[in-house]
Image 1 (cartoon, rainbow, N blue to C red):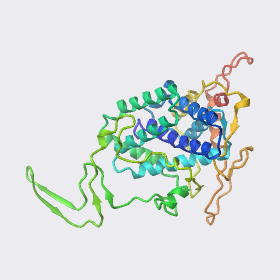
Image 2: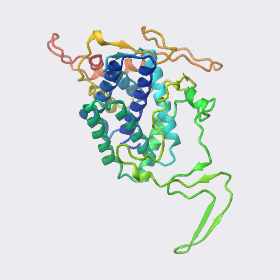
Image 3: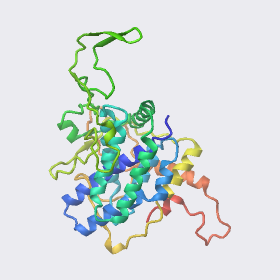
Image 4: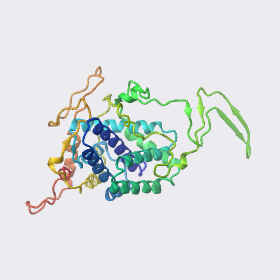
Length: 367
């Protein structure tokens, strides 16, 4: 598996998370100052230099368990509070959005354009916050530095790793079903016609070479293909022209809303090796550092209309009947229990119990 997948995965997921939160803030008519503070607080945590340096390091992709926990902590670095039920649905919606984008990109290098589309949209969210804008631009430039020189083969490996991470998620999303880009099984439709990747030949062509091309024979391949436009290498600048619309904010229209249903995802998550788990927790720790919000400024945001009020999370162990198409996604403590066990193994108990040294890492995340 490629070792430089995490930055692309994390910031694309983070972009989709911000799209949903920003849309719900508008839909629920949250005060402009509060809404702006929520977005800027999350963005500043996502893009702060010390966190960026941890994300950009060559490393294996983290488990879904760790990624889910990381975004949960990220959301709550702001004055906004979201219940566990909504967070589970939000994570599934984020996953399906990036899965659609990564599966539909016509060229592996398009992954970078998708990421830059997310950066451009996030910049619009925080246009009046100079500190946040500066951090996003720094991240943008670092991505150009790290990824622009990679070969097409290296981008193919990155894309394969991303799709492998996302393959077990087949939740149905109303907007994708309506646009007929997702079928009733939750699988995305990959068309066999249309624009081909830049640099590739149109299917149905045989070329004969003897030192140079001497003959070209064409035959009907069963599809209607068009050559790709050569704009792949004109988009490595902030706000530049991209080769794709994938990664843009599909919730920009207030009338767009999403209903997500669960369809056959395997909820069993295996932890990676001990060293990787330790690295995951170290990255979670980088989220610590934001000033704790004042209690009287907090508010709760309902992300999905079917979400329940906050309650004690329950582990669902019963098998889902095959005839049931829609599953009410509930918060699960399975992941937190495993992570807490790892934290306990890594924690050195202080000799003086009155000191705070050795405090549970995950409890420190509750800002």
